[in-house]
Amino acid sequence: MRKVILDVDTGVDDALAIAYATASPEVELLGVTTTYGMAPAECSARNTLLVLEQLKCDVPVFRGAEQPLIRTRQYSGTFHGTDGLGNVVRSEPKRAASGMHAVDFIIEQVRKHGRDLTLVTTAPLTNLALAIQKAPDIVGRIGRVVTMGGAVATPGNVTKFAEANIIIDPHAAQKVFSSELPITLVGLDVTRKTVLRQEEVERWREKNTPCSTFFADFTKYYIQAYKVNHPYLKGCALHDPLAVGIAVHPELVNMVPMYIEVDLEEDALGRTTEDLRRKSPGGPNTNVCMEVDAERFVSRFLSRIDQAFSR
Image 1 (cartoon, rainbow, N blue to C red):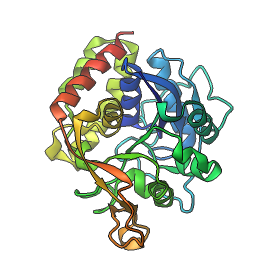
Image 2: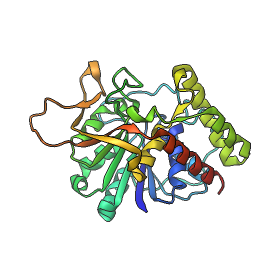
Image 3: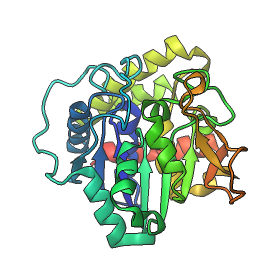
């Protein structure tokens, strides 16, 4: 069983990733840390608590960064709604987030569990960048960082170069990738190949439980946005759940070691690319996922989600 922290900005696919993690017997979910991203920071924390409540999981939640390190980029709400969950939230969670800051929780858990800990990030990398800044020793202690973000050999989804999690806080991302952390990058190169179809979401609705209906409602919004913006996919990409899947089953993907940097120049801001101009010839800093067994992953994801809804 892998000890895991999820670092999220709970929009729709983060919520699906949380459900997948809680239903995976290979995962011991120590906590969920939140930040701004697909919604404001307060919505991200609230959404995370609501999702865990529906899933009947009493996992602690820790609020983190409320803005990027240097510049602010506002999310449009196109794919996740202005509240992060398809504008379907009608209530407040029954419990509150922990009083401990997300950054402090990450540092504490890395020092406690060391190589046994996997951090899965499905949000802008601000919390992790701040943790490195505050406690540089964690870089050499953590077992693995699995990051959903970036687009190495495929177009971005915010600009022609950049993926959303990276461009929202590119300076944090560059700090993380230049830190020598053991990073696996789960980018658009593979996540666009893992697709959730509308008919599967309708099966959730047919279960007619509060949890399955809640998930079906906000995921429907996400799929409708994909129909308008990416009709060729015939569904919505499972970006964040795939990061959880690879944290547990790395054999799902083929990886290429690369020395990744994040472009901070305005004309290509947020681009994740191999740094061929680095002064040091040091080895790769990232394992980049380039191919995925999409059918196998989606099948496993749907099975675990069914288990989550059956609690």
